[in-house]
Image (tube, rainbow over all chains, first blue to last red; front, side):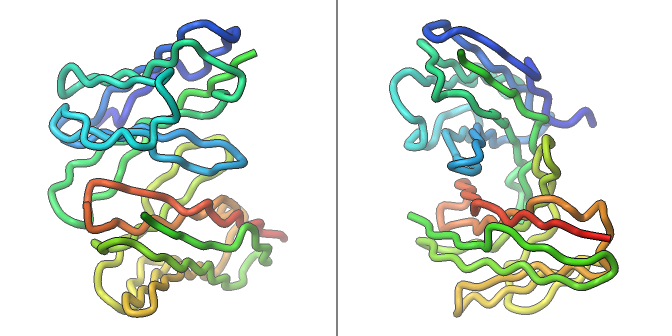
Amino acid sequence: DAGVIQSPRHEVTEMGQEVTLRCKPISGHNSLFWYRQTMMRGLELLIYFNNNVPIDDSGMPEDRFSAKMPNASFSTLKIQPSEPRDSAVYFCASSSQESLGSPLHFGNGTRLTVT
Amino acid sequence: GQNIDQPTEMTATEGAIVQINCTYQTSGFNGLFWYQQHAGEAPTFLSYNVLDGLEEKGRFSSFLSRSKGYSYLLLKELQMKDSASYLCAPAPGNFNKFYFGSGTKLNVKP
């Protein structure tokens, strides 16, 4: 089992540029989550999908952020245009949701720096 | 919504026991998770409690009191590698949403 795979691991971009983060969940997991982590705000839930359908995007900070899950094995989080305050580590996580105790499995994260 | 409260930072000595507390308020409840996160790494699953009481798993134990909205993580025989942040995550009534506490940074000293 390869685990949750995120790319890129690091992204440095200039303000105003478009950023696309990618995630491949664990095969067979039907729930996918995007989180953002900063020192100030901790781990924030941005959006989650169940069976490829966005269930709740209330955590998405603003319209500059969008997420898609075109199929069960791929999701993207896009920021357009990016701003310095978007600098953070972005984690993708997946879960099988087979039972109440099904944990989240996290990818290694994408460290985004917007200058 | 959710309120999750954990101490920001704790320090303990190698070989000792430390208890990390978490209090929470959720709309609905479907159990509570503890995660460990080493600096620069992703969170990893430690434990899950859905019923009241203590669940023991090696050096780590987790306790839950649903009526008090309270949980703790107990780490015994501390090792240097236990230096990490520990995140509390109650699963709310809408089971799919996982919110995390801000985490407790544990420093283990020789």
